[in-house]
Image (cartoon, rainbow, N blue to C red; front, top):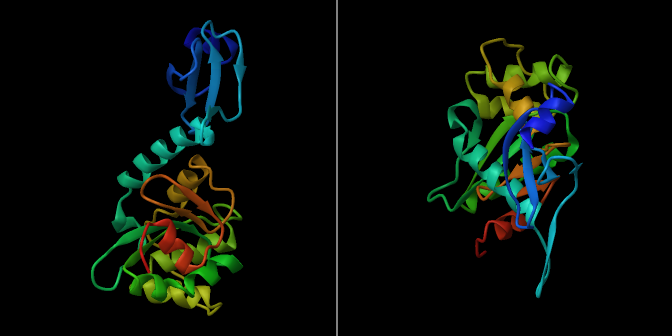
Length: 215
């Protein structure tokens, strides 16, 4: 399969090839995180999610694979590179959120951070300026990350208040690229430790339920 792909073009970034759950069909994982499928001889490649027909209904095998890969990436993240709002008292769970300063639903979620913290949920922010690296949102996020009090700067920025412009070595561009690799298409993009991706705003109580917490 690899030889076929290499022969098709030098810019196909294959990370791993492994057997799928279907005989003679192989999973081809690209370095971007995308999963393709191939016949055993590599002659045919196709995309899309693979579902298993089970007694309880359709089971998304491809999404299970994505979840495992995302969980591994989330576990490897350096919390020192994030803006973290820790749980109050005992931590019962955490969410990792790719956020944008100017996004209305990011601001709505941020209004509930205290409620999440009070329920024992830590909120860990990564930067994802939707307009891209070099945009106004990007530089606003850089200023937040470079502030002496990151939490305060994040909160004020998400209220629409002006914050001091700052520059320093920062992870925003790398976090933006990671978000793209993990399939982030909009903000907020909420990741759970098991690799689930919850796209868009979700109220605090529903997030607690998704984490398996009893309210």
